[in-house]
Image (cartoon, rainbow, N blue to C red; front, side, top):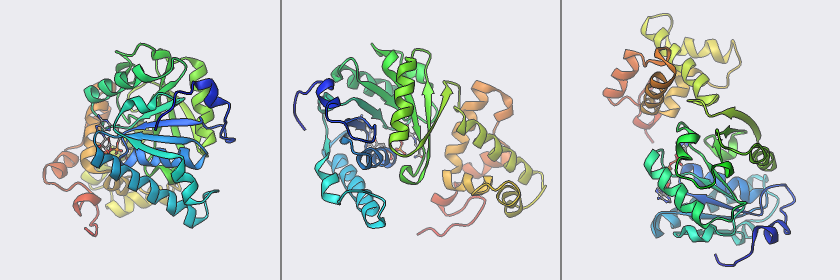
Length: 300
Ligand SMILES: NC(=O)c1ccc[n+]([C@@H]2O[C@H](COP(=O)([O-])OP(=O)(O)OC[C@H]3O[C@@H](n4cnc5c(N)ncnc54)[C@H](O)[C@@H]3O)[C@@H](O)[C@H]2O)c1
């Protein structure tokens, strides 16, 4: 991608949906590809920057396959070629220079993210927005080395992005309230619903979801009911689409254990991981990805 348009020029060619005209996504893995898909369908031009050429090619394949699937399902307005024409991949963050918004979606590692965000910020126009899709790291901590923390916010998407309707907009201490409003607008423009949360550990979704999962594991440990019956209490009794133990299997017991440890450190002992969770992780019973967790899963 090339060109030296300023943001004003880009805003003169609006998407019609309210989505930014040009969006960058750093890291085109599971989440980054989904985020790219969402903005492409809303009319944005999207550039993914990956760490090397192979990863960039893999990201392109993921995005184009999911766009194609939306076209086939009839949930996209344009044909696949029109989306492909607005999509590019690169290995150079300089290609984000014209973006109004860049969403960072590299792995959940504090130092990696801080380094990536500072490199991206350097190439952006001062008015451009920078967002992180972190699922657990503090937005204020990520902003430590940024020159313009007022233009930085959390945008926590859910997996799989195309099928998920919630985005948590995480307001850092320094995030400009105008940016928080813009971010809410962009979330609506891609057909999802924003909620605004303060930069508190676990934001709103993980804090509540993990608490329910941990209590379900403690109930199983204490013999209160079987895994199936604990899950049915929530699916049938409270109309949750999936029970807390099955959800823990889907997310991965190791992932949930990591979040619980972090929440126990930051919010207190009420998030202390149950012994059963630790034991299952130590035994490699990680849920769907390992074939066994609270349920048996077909390994294919
Ligand atoms: N997977 C989920 O369910 C989920 C849900 C919400 C949020 N998140 C968060 O989203 C982020 C990404 O998670 P994911 O599941 O997509 O991970 P992933 O491993 O699928 O993707 C990460 C991508 O980043 C790329 N990458 C690594 N270093 C890079 C660099 N320096 N520059 C550019 N690209 C680089 C990798 O090549 C990879 O394609 C994490 O912060 C994670 O916590 C994940």
